Length: 127
Image (cartoon, rainbow, N blue to C red; front, side):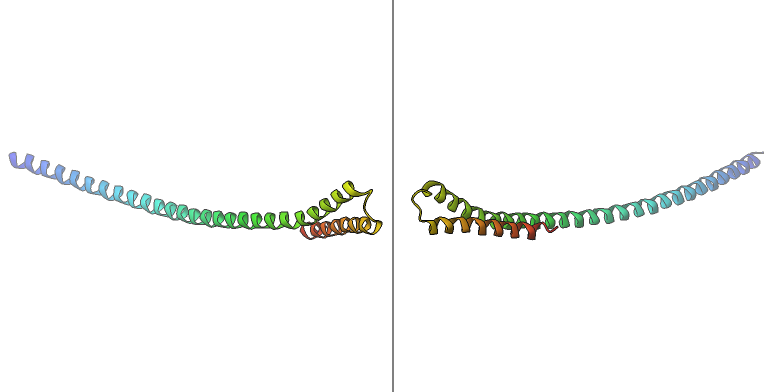
């Protein structure tokens, strides 16, 4: 009788061990599947990070080009304005003492400055 009980106990232990082993295999497969999915997600995130870094670099370069353009535009626009302002100040201050030829010379500088200013604006903002 004791031998029969031992045999039953042994069968139960073997079956339990087999079930536990099968559970472990199923669990390992699930873990491997999850790891595979996570690996794909990590790869996707790394790609997105790289893409974002490239976009940031492009944005920085565009910002730098914009700053250079604005600096050049500011300089180019100030030159004719400065000349016109100087001629207008001379005409305003000394109009009653200026010879007509000098007066017309200053007025011509103002007209030329306006033309230069218009040309610059047209080159920056074509219609």
